[in-house]
Length: 171
Image 1 (tube, helix red, strand yellow):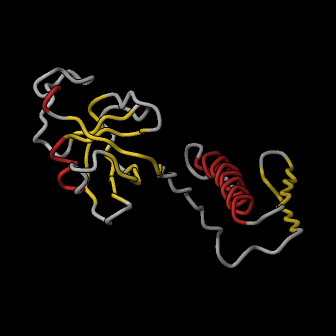
Image 2: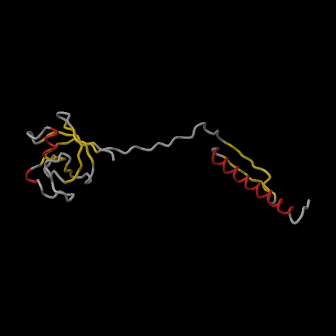
């Protein structure tokens, strides 16, 4: 049927375009929401005449939940020592001067500078939180050097050495 000025032509073009758009939207939705789906489009000219959906498995009632693996946190058990007056004021590996009265200073051979650690004295259960700011100890069998104040907090100044657990704190 022809209305005034090509109205018929515009209506006849809109119908196939809308039909085709709806076909694609529906097929993408079904393909995304239904597992193992095969979508077939049968088209005659510009108009999509059929959508055939074949499903080989049921859609799960709940989508699977993605689990994010937790970061591994290292704990090292070893012998700790302390350093103090002979190194007080000298430059540490991070460029700052060593302060033997700061209990938060720790030297470690391999942990990156700036790593926050919790050190627990395994002989008495006392612990402190510190930051790796220096390198050492350089004597065999030791893994961590604490400042004088750190050794006081863990109560092993008189012994000089103690068994500790060095736990890397999560950032």
